[in-house]
Image 1 (cartoon, rainbow, N blue to C red):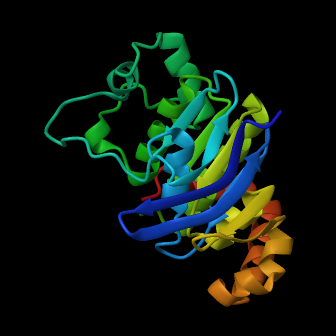
Image 2 (tube, rainbow, N blue to C red):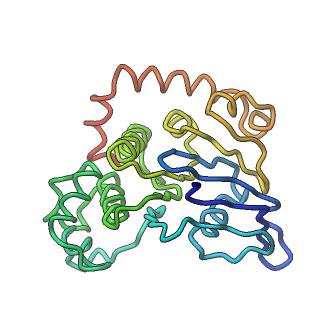
Length: 246
């Protein structure tokens, strides 16, 4: 049974149509990436799945008691406010220490428990946000441009961590990203969005589609091949690099 079913979804803000006749399914355990130019409706689609945006037409159906985890682009925390990672992660629902420890380990930063939130690097901060999303043991993990502001190695290692989370927990992942060279390789399925679904399929199928090339050009196919080569031959090096990547 699908975790999420989006059927003929249209979203408008005032007189402006943002999404038109979008339909898609998210299946258990798969990693799906939504790509598209700025203003293509990616975030609106994600917000409709969460339930934060009401569609103008169509509907979003979530599986019964579906557990969602959400990793935002960024979260502002007052730098003058003393707060450890442990305290931050305990805030939402007073999670037990063992659950917090497990979530940090799954996010790839098991040693940050007592670190100050204000002193984390960009890469570490996003891993902590990932840990926060994992505390509730989600069946579907949602990421909205979660590596915004990180460098390329930092982004690559973050998305490899997402692959590890999927492998270890079995959760499905739906993510939005502009970093085509990274996310295309990490995805089982890619949906190209530009106000409507332009094309979808495996990364190779989408990268070859005329609709995709019209939006992004053909250069990402070469980048995809290069990234896969790096992924196969330099995994440990990239992973180590990123824990402090900005």
